[in-house]
Length: 125
Image (tube, rainbow, N blue to C red; front, side, top):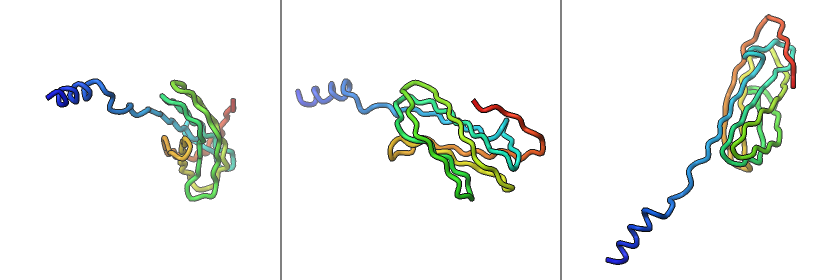
């Protein structure tokens, strides 16, 4: 009887594990979602995380051999913004952006900017 009572108390008090950390990945490709063929494609990646991330961001253009990687460190409870530039082609690019922490993929997003005939002017930070 004592063992059952002790087991019941421990099950109410002992932690059952930690909550999953939350990581938010936001991707914007192009200037206001548009790009001009022949110009560089600006990709903005914003990361907010509840835990330390020591890894890399990988940006890949689908149907292309173009991949760009950057090592990143993001402190717990912060938001960081990273910028990438990629070449454009006549095909509408679809991008896959992956945030990795060591060997684990923490978050993944896709983006597809629209091609425009307008002259786009932008400033990189």
